Length: 110
Image (cartoon, helix red, strand yellow):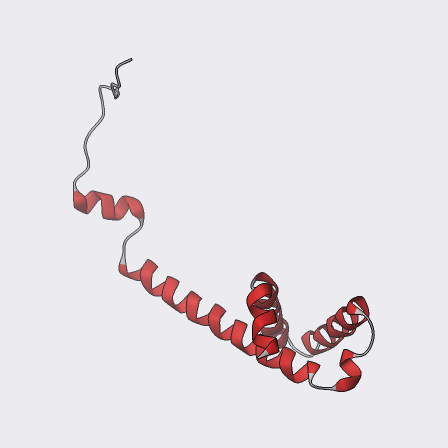
């Protein structure tokens, strides 16, 4: 079997400058990626810090896993209800902590 690439008759090869426009640029996308990574990373660290503080209260640790998880969900929901900024902050940090749960467990032990 031969590997031949059949292109349409109207096919035109793009140069490097045209590829930049086709792919969406470079610097702005890179800057947005870096800012996004910093925001998500700081949200993760903040979430871990808040989880540690919350778990340091003995009353919050009493009961089985589901009881503790329910109590934590209630505390997060109460904080989220205070303002749109809290809602966004808590939502992002909760998502990051849950996404990185194995790493979070290790950090909570330390």
